[in-house]
Amino acid sequence: MAPITQSAPLASMIDHTLLKPEATRAQIEQLCKEAKKFRFAAVCVHPFRVATCAELLKGSGVKVCTVIGFPLGANRAEVKALETVRACADGATEIDMVMNIGAFKDGNLAAVENEIASVIKAAQGRTVKVILETALLTDDEIRSACAVCIIAGADFVKTSTGFGPGGATVHAVKIMKETVDGQLEVKASGGIRDRETMMAMIEAGATRIGTSSGVAMLGVAGGSPNPSEQKDEY
Image (tube, rainbow, N blue to C red; front, side, top):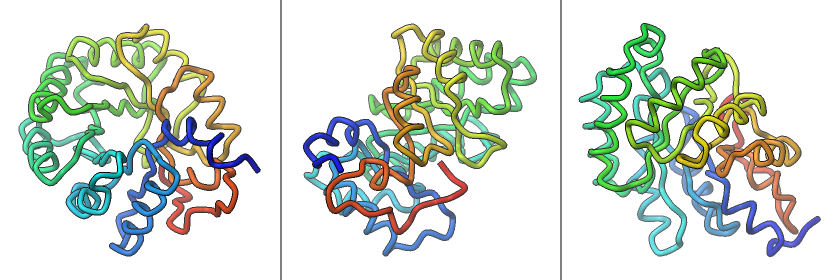
């Protein structure tokens, strides 16, 4: 197994994730402990757990990411913005929002752009990633959604919630990377549970990986599978 020093660059690309609805405080505490030990980029948790994570990770350099409008994206823009304001007040430093997929499918791109911009404004300079739920989109729709995210001023486009009909694919990540063309970054999430898949996503253009299997994927000395690992999410 690779020593932790060799795995650190990969760890810095991982959002260590726990979004099971039944996740307990004890599991959240374990998530944060692992994030500090392996120097992950961030933990990704529900808004209710943000304050706990912010306290546990204070001074560690690990960011606190939360999800907005999750997992369906069908909330009104003002609700997503308010949710963002509260999450930031609780200590969130990154925001992963689900775009309004129904509005996008309607062709109402102005509404989608407006809600993304509203969340960005509410985030006050914090990193905002927009979840497209690519399994529900055609290739052309993925390109169009990425274009909207560029116009709105997002920092990342992201493949999936992990709760939809499918997760990240190399094909989708390549389309996203080609479309954003360096203007935004790409986060791959959903069904990434082994190192081979993670490396394929990075090779395709992802600069951040959302997964609940980060510890196991690093293959670090003394590493063990995350006890809170999710089989059906992220």
